[in-house]
Image 1 (tube, rainbow, N blue to C red):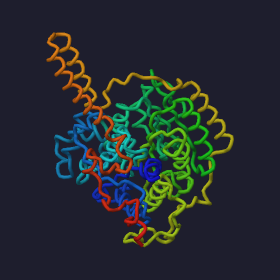
Image 2 (tube, helix red, strand yellow; image 1 turned 90 degrees about the horizontal axis):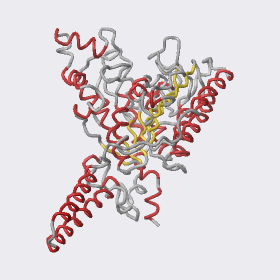
Image 3 (tube, rainbow, N blue to C red; image 1 turned 45 degrees about the horizontal axis):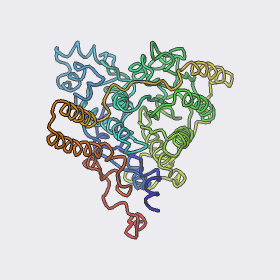
Amino acid sequence: DYEMLNKTQCYDRIAYYYDNDVGYFHYGPGHPMKPFRICLTHDLVIQYSLYRHLNIYRPRLVTAKQMTAFHSEEYIDFLSSINPDNCFHQKYKLKLEQFTNAPKSDCPIFDGLFEFNQRSVGGSIDGALRLCYDACDTAINWSGGFHHAKRCESSGFCYVNDIVLAIIELLKHFERVLYIDIDVHHGDGVEEAFYGTNRVLSLSLHKYGDGFFPGTGFYKDTGIAAGKYHAVNFPFNDGIDDDGYFRVYTTIIDKVMERYRPSVIVMQCGADSLAQDKIGVFNISSQGHGRVVDYMRRKYNHCGAHHVPMLVLGGGGYTIQNVARLWCYETAVLCKQAHNMSDNLPYSEFLNHFRPTFKLHVPADKTMTNKNSEQYLQEMTNKILQQIKRIEIAPSVQLNTERMPHVRMAIANRNQHNHNQNNNSASGWNMQVGADFDISEQQGIVRETELSEQNPDTRVSQHPTFVEQYVAPSTEFYADDKDQDMKEK
């Protein structure tokens, strides 16, 4: 029946975050990072009608205080006050060197810098919160994925590390977080943030050596203290292809999932690992890249037996038309619509950005040499598997952070009630206190389950906690003869 359908349909459980303004910021002339790629991606999502299978939300602006959950207050104060007009003032000279490694920095000071980060980071944090509330199985924020930013330093075009901030939120509810990074660059900022804890396992597959940025991610870098063996790095050479990458990935991820048993997954899908990227050196097609995402969806996410929730983020990617192609395709993969997509791009006002082919898929470069021999891949895989065997099986942790504030309030009410019962002998008075507590406790229970146990016919977007963010048309979804999806041509 429809009630069961609404519970099981995977597209009813996918939250997609997009901010209309994030794509119109500009790093500066000649800079390879182009936020406009997010606009191109979203336009393809709309033109392919994928929005019908998503809950689309506008992320809230992240405050400076929220950013200091990971970053230092001094660093965030700097980002919020610096701009192209004052960056040459004497008082900012030392701070520029300290926080951006100026004048050699690859992170320029541009108009709207802080607002850009507020908008980019918001979807990652909101998506993490939605997963904590069990309001979705998959959350997507292609505007996020800034994995190079450090606690007190911008790096690699990244200023605020939305991934770390999202994981911090997830750790308030989930015991173990698996972070997967398939960007061509090593996810050094995220790995460094959780290098000493076993509550986050970082898996990064990237180019290493030959002076390639950021210069970290050797396979022997495995973590310290409680986090020993919880940093897994697979270093590739130039030219890795679809088959080699997928074979290595599936072998490693299956062992990681079997051993670590994460409660939630955060996946950074950097598009600079695609063939033909302006900075990347891999030779992976868009279908090969999407195959990795599809493997996670089918085997471990909402359609798999393991049912592990997943936060999917963007990342690098500097041939912007290919970035848009890839992330649109992977959006379709996540909502099980990839088989319905034509390789011929639909018409839109941005169609000329995709000339001369006007095709969806990005092929591998047939002329590129694969410097990853079968012997190298097998030997390195064996080394990584030996490391994974030393990971503690499903490490148990004490959750010191309250899950939701009203749970703490309910416990406080209960303790107060017990105290009153012990110190008052008048039975009538005690009965009145008990009656009042029962009501407040019941209200607390309702609030605790309001998101996970709502009427299945009520969409997540209609829940009061999130309704102010929802941007899809309220008349878009029906189950009966009023269904407008079927009528629209």
